[in-house]
Image (tube, rainbow, N blue to C red):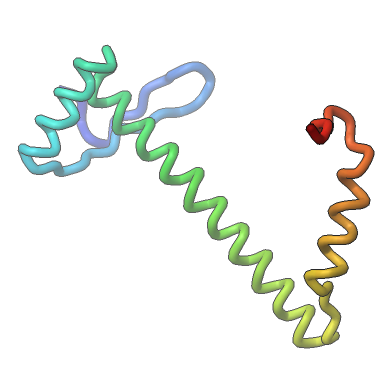
Length: 103
């Protein structure tokens, strides 16, 4: 058995083992899904964690961007109206390559 703090080499990245406690139902679900997808429960858990981190990091970046935009609006009062935005979008897409032709 490998201790929980053991380190291994995988490619050039240092990899460490981290334990997670799962109830029996979750473990069984991972095992069933792994068989259906021809993947190990370990792979499924790594994939789920990776997708969760990507999604949450993206959310936090967007939230920070929104906060900065709100701060800019409060400080300057500058904004772009819906009509101005729609007009600009129309200008940008009018001659866009690959634009679908109206039927």
